Length: 225
Image (cartoon, rainbow, N blue to C red; front, side):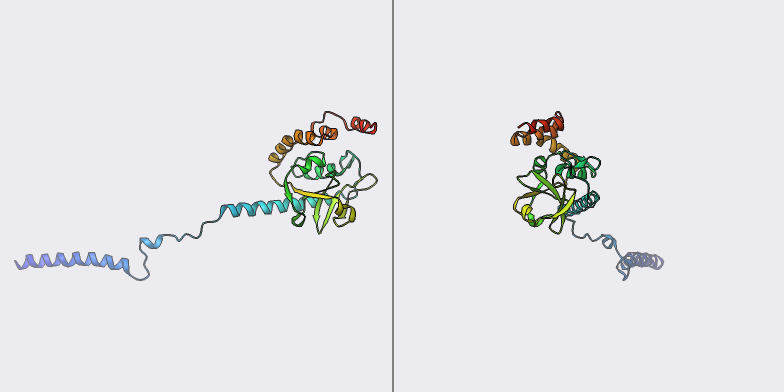
């Protein structure tokens, strides 16, 4: 009996040591249990704010790049109906050429340009915004510091002018911001074309949009009026 009792006591001591020794090791200082492996999650990012910030930075970069490119065309002679440095520029041909360099397709018409993009208040203008004058018959590109770059009229070159000059200040009609994916903007241009030409009832718009009538023929038609 004594040997059996000793064996039972030995088994109990070993069982006690294994059970409580393992528990002690999990609770020992400096050692982490399973709960310690859970990663603390920070606040979830606001996807809408991040997307808006990305859009703003994209808008700013496109506008600034458009202005830098437009400045390279300073001094190009004005030519009515022109839309390239080799032929010269009229007002809408100038902004059309600049934005085409960045994959944005615009109509060759200040009236068509005015119906595109987002309306912008004068106090919120940014580089690259289009500015309109004289019943929307003239368009230029804002470059910052209350100035814009444009092709004014016959006998002039592409130049920078202040919005505070008396004639432009008095005839200012508003501004548009065009930054959106080029494909969507091009689709919007085509969808807008018919509506603009009907609303304005101007044969020049039809020629600019559908290309069915030559500018020379329209010039002769207008000169006969």
